[in-house]
Image (tube, rainbow, N blue to C red; front, side):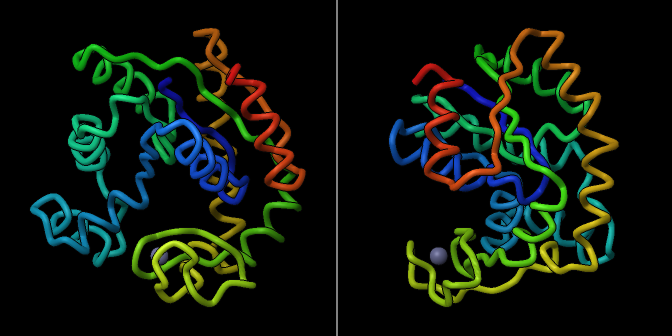
Length: 208
Ligand SMILES: [Zn+2]
């Protein structure tokens, strides 16, 4: 099954993706992790991405797309994938459709994890990520449960940037939701409960 995950930053998309990956073996393709991984590994694409980020600029679409294409060609994508962090706007969704078609793949669903913005602000400020592997947890974790790495607060999750991210999300993603609705691929779950309860709703929506 090939899925795109939609939802505001902090809606819990990463947590749900990690669970689906563990239970059903789909590859979790997070653009944030891809970028961090390519930069850490010093690949040509990673070095290029770093030059933009160091200059405080957004990493261009075509570079992110190149990383995604590379990842989609990996062996572990044979059981399907969960794309997290891309597409972020309608133009990217159109591009993704054609990239997948070229690879003989297609999207089965766009799963929207819906959460109230006030809940998100609270959640995001408590989120912590692993410096080594990118695993995301909360401020009760000082050590990564996956690899033992150090957990820290990403700049993205600091209060000063949260509202800005939510505003950007609302502007860019509303048309994206309409796009997937138009393709009859949009599934929506209430993401406000406990992650275990949300996961039950996610599986129900996906028919898993
Ligand atoms: Zn880790």
